[in-house]
Length: 216
Image (cartoon, rainbow, N blue to C red; front, side, top):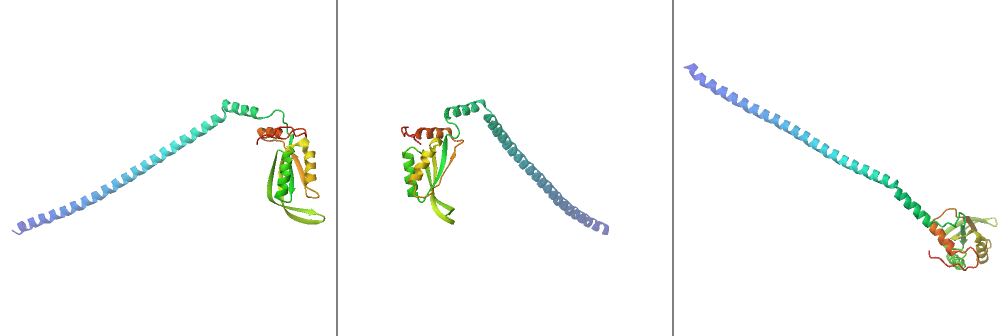
């Protein structure tokens, strides 16, 4: 009878132990499965991002190569070179050589004097254009003393014909308030052909002043 009484008790304990073990095992398996799923998802997402980035890089690389190739072939196109040569040949005057025109630098005591001289030079066709630059500080020696004056630079810039520089210099010297005025000239070796052509139209070769004025 004792054995029969203990047997159901043992069966009950075994059943409870197996149930507890099963629950623990199931929980452990669920944890392992969840971890595996997370790892798989992480790997999949990472691979997806890598795939997207590689696609973007390939796309931009293709665009960059296309732009570079297009630019290169356009720059080497015979049509482009022909157009450049045609524009140059049309714009460049054939009768103007380097040194035909000169740029002269003249300083004046103030803007009023500079403007008066500039207008007279252009009116007499001794200059095509005079640029007046205010607020120039000049430091120089005069009668054994260092002088510092605020002046106006006439970048005559006086643009004129080189053959008429003596005439232009004489006019400035005779109408300038300074005892010794600054007139410095340098020849124009290179320039925009249409601009040089305009200079030739505005300032006549002779000093008769009969040449028609151009339009800047």
